[in-house]
Image 1 (tube, rainbow, N blue to C red):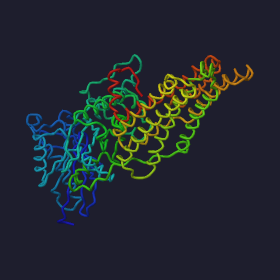
Image 2: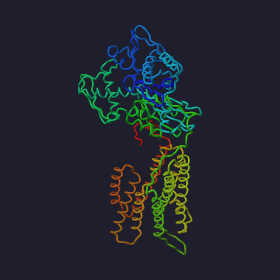
Image 3: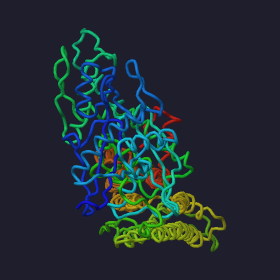
Image 4: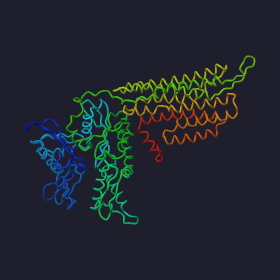
Length: 640
């Protein structure tokens, strides 16, 4: 359909150049100007002929590698490029690439393509932008628009996902390219996206990883005592190893292992994902630091992020997405075609006044379990049974109508008070869980309910504990607050954790709330076993039964309480089972009349520890960068 305007989106990357064409009917088509889905960005600067691009340039470099420019986007700064005894302008280098693509696009469109939108790195300024515009003019384009690559990538992702950036929201774009790994923070303002900060993670680019892989392969292929492998970049054989490493890296994106052919005298090697994962560990540590630094430079924290986007040729490297998730609290959007995201996004209308009105930020649905429904009732029955046992086993001595001696289980008061707070905690967990089982729940409404629930849990749990202590004191006619102290001292740390969790809930990103909320469930089995074990021990020491039976019941109660402690403090299933067995055996051994109080206090301490770890989990969800800071302070520590 001649006469219908078509546009071309082009992304000149460090390794490859991608192009997407808008067809006359409005559809889009990725171009294959060199017969493959992408055009190699390298050019051959022939001093006696035209500039060669694509496969022709790669073939010519075999005889004259010194005339091959592998990465024009990084190497060209706007000035002349020396080639042999003459110089070539940077604009002419770009013109050669763009003219090659324009010719193919015009052939596909059936008409001349004169409009082009090109992406540029976020750090480019006036000189290199003007140079690229000059190159486009030399290539025959009459309408040239430049857009920063992170903006184009964001437009591509949000247009396909149907989830635009909310006004005032921010986007973190991680572009894992061949020559650099760029981190860019964008902010949605009235007329589009504004770049707040950008940074390069050194040593984390695709070529850096290729060098790590090539070095690993050559060293693995060298027999003990053999010659040291050649690692000189000027050696042509080193480039062969680099190319083999790049191919192996791409192959491992879809398989567990791959064979790699090296140059003589090295035999072929096998590289698997475990090898690659180990090689990129230092890269992931640098990425973790880089993310925190770019967020600090943008003066935002992870809670300000609406989207995290991961793209580029290295997007599928093992651990990259997981590091972004752990550091930002948001799983990254990874485009289905990471290679075309920037070029296609260049054609997409940028966010701004023409963007669809963003909807409210919603929280993903939460799964409601049967245990969530019964947990409050089980905890309430356990707490009331424990405090009832205090009254049932209470013994007082009176003289002249006055109580002069009291014998009761103070540790049972403490246990009942702690379980009372857990009862309120489980209700605080249940209310938002039920609310979040629906669709499209607004983030702000969910946070408000979580805050009210956990503040209520802290208040009501502490009040219930206080009532227990006062009731016991009133029953025995105590004039001091010792029984109140027995109830409040262990209950207050658990209640304080609930209160602080309420304060931090608003900073947790919406996508992270379901997983975080699930970790606030107190183990039902642990509380049930702990209550039964404590009651069994107290029953044995306060009921007139045979000595042999007393010892048996105390030991069984101690073993049960030991299992409850293991289930309370240990998260890993295998380690929990091992710990439960050890503490059960320990309970059978040390369960005696004189130790039942210490064992009960051990369970109470475990519950306090559990509440403290829930607060730590909340802090990590709210401020993921804390873990990185702690690693910097204590490099040798393993912080989960």
